[in-house]
Length: 341
Image: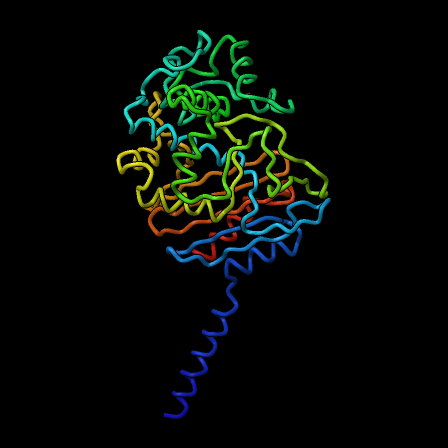
């Protein structure tokens, strides 16, 4: 009897020892920070419980300002999720329809007259992406991009026939939001999303406003590489992981958009060739054995951002950094996902 009890206790102790060796999400984040690969802030939530909420490094290296959990960091293309929700809010108010032609609301070149709002939202419009062509122009504005689109003579492909990520399409959506609401993009988002949700450290960048507490961007060599363009819709937003988690919860609890629109947001469209795309309204979508996750990343200059959400299990991974190309985003996401799955 003594031998069997001893064996059980020994086995139990071994199990405890092995389980204690498993890295948790906080361990992973600290490893990336210690290696100099992550300078920023992160929130990780597992089954509705926050398991990591921390900030690492400096917000401004020249002034030796510490980065903390309230430091706004540029989120780049994560802004598209807010643009999509803004369009859905206007739809819920009866001010537009997804199958309306975008040209109903703003001037577009002849070749883009039949592009729909829905196609802009899910990147099936065929509108050429400006990012690799003119994004290096400092102070680039939405009007600059629209002027460039007017200089072209055709779509990349027939609308609805293919998926091709287009920042230009989301700039058009920003212009539609402004036209329909009668407000600047930033004002509309502030009044309809940021303020109602208590997102106190989230705003749309405006060059005329001094934001003393925002993070400055740097490259891998810790040299300044700050945000330098002024487009909205495709980007333009500064935020924090804690604020983005408030947004996450609002979407899960239908505080902003109704159940029908929520379902539509996470539904990939069928293309005219019969294939299904992997992008809904502002989110990349993955389904595996009935489990649906949505995500978006962002990156520009010295900033990188990731927002991953498990819709069934109420799990979220949100990480923002102001030392962009030092951060191996895909590896980080892969390692953190292993700790919460």
